[in-house]
Length: 165
Image 1 (cartoon, rainbow, N blue to C red):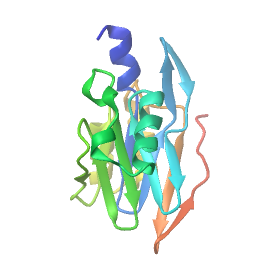
Image 2 (image 1 turned 180 degrees about the vertical axis):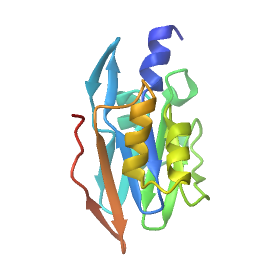
Image 3 (image 1 turned 180 degrees about the horizontal axis):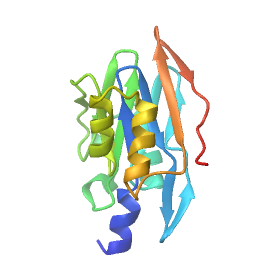
Image 4 (image 1 turned 90 degrees about the vertical axis):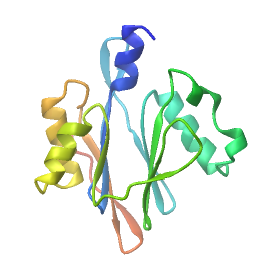
């Protein structure tokens, strides 16, 4: 994978605080930052991804089509793989390079290039939206606003999008 490919797939921060899933809005087209929505709500689940937009949407489609292990997207075995995070009233799972769900067993979690900064913010009491904002301030591969969904009593409520000033 060349440097441009590394940069494209490294852009994202996703944070989970036990109630809210949030993600930044930065994507990359070559060396240009563009705005992208990385969260998608389907019924009682919220999906987020790290990696290319096509790969992220492909993983969501695979999951919504039944998550058949035999139909796991072939791109997940290449350098262009993506990570899929799914939040639901029962908790959070994520998929990496295999069709096996991995449970987030901690009270909070973060994924993507800004994860270390987001985890630090979460550990200090920030909610998921604020953790993404902090990661966006201190990581050059995250930014351009925040999208978030909160899970409350089994219902998913979308929060207003936060735009970068």
